[in-house]
Amino acid sequence: MSGRLCRRLLRLGCPASSAGGWSRLSGGGLNGTGPPGTGRSGLSGGGRMNVFSREMKQRQKDWAAQLQDSQQYDYLRQEVGSRVADRVYDIARCVPQEVVERFCLTDVSQQSLRRRRPSEIPTHCVLADEEFLPFKENTFDLVVSSLALHWINDLPGALRQIHQVLKPDGVFIGAMVGGETLYELRCSLQLAETEREGGFSPHISPYTAVTDLGNLLGQAGFNMLTVDIDDIQVHYPGIMEVMTDLQGMGESNCAWNRKSLLHRDTILAAAAIYKEMYGSEDGSIPATFEILYMIGWKPHESQAKPAKRGSATASFGDLSKTGQPSCTDQP
Amino acid sequence: MGVNSRQHGAAQGFHRSSVCEFMSGSNVWSRTREKMRLFPELFAQCANEAAVYGKCVAATTTGTQELRKDLCAKEFEALKICFTNAAKKRAR
Image 1 (cartoon, each protein chain N blue to C red):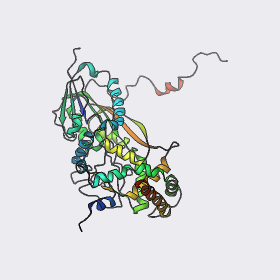
Image 2: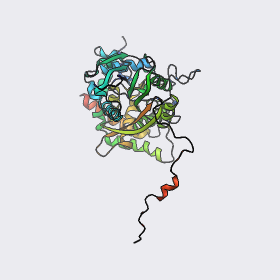
Image 3: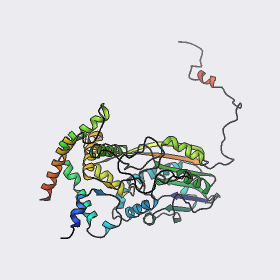
Image 4: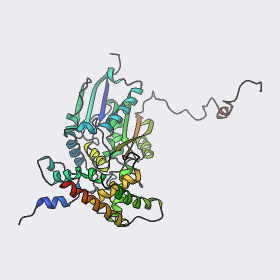
């Protein structure tokens, strides 16, 4: 073992991934003209958003985890998880295999925690809500969240808490579902409900826009941000398979304003529209998952800072001189 | 003359947020789920009607006509009749 500081890792949300998302997109979310939503929704006076029912999400995740064949729904999480792992390995200072001394896995669902894969790294499982992390400040060198942030009500608050539990010069690597995810499903349901019922209500949960993400991370106090987007397209035989798989992943909608009933006629209409508008040659239909990857560092003196104004040693004018042949003889 | 709970359940749409009930034996949710499992098979038999209905609705996204309730009711009726017939044939 090298003489490094002890490494502690925190992982939010279990290796299974979840779909859906949180967003303040004004245009992206559907504003229902259909039946009014049930329960609390929207902004409360204190500015704390309450969009999702966390209790419902816990029940959905518990149910999905105890399914007999729950592994078959893991493909999305595994794909995103492996891409997040790539990013972790890329960061030179974190070499998990050798120097991780403690690994904390948190999830809001107990069944998901039980289902986790065994690993050689000593792991603590903590049953915790991502919005209320039960850890002291400056505990972790690395926090990883893979497809868990999109069901959080107060995302700025959660990011601030992550920032708090990180040690200075600690890093947060996250992946969450973003704006364009499942737009085919969303549009098909919207058109079908409009044509069949005369109005529509949101069935897909709201997502974060990539432009918002940078601001959110900055406001939470993170430095040296990196945000990039990846599109994963999965092909399904039909709309029922899309919805069944989302449910099996534990990604059913749990927003307060969700409509709990989907009429048979509407499903039939949506299936026809989905196939007609987005179907491919071989009869399958695509579902897009837009994944946003983010990396942020907790500030520390050793980190590179922007150079002071007036300290430049080269001029932008020199750029125009590069690329021209340096030798003087002309053809 | 009691209430037949099976009829009551079957007439409703697909309820996706049930968690505990259907795990314990046969009830309205498990029966509805069973019916929904047949959906892809039945839907595949009505591909033409589905395409016609789909085109009618999709046309509103590109053209000037705005989508409103029952704009494509005729096409949907054809699709629904085809679907119901396929279900009846399957049930035999």
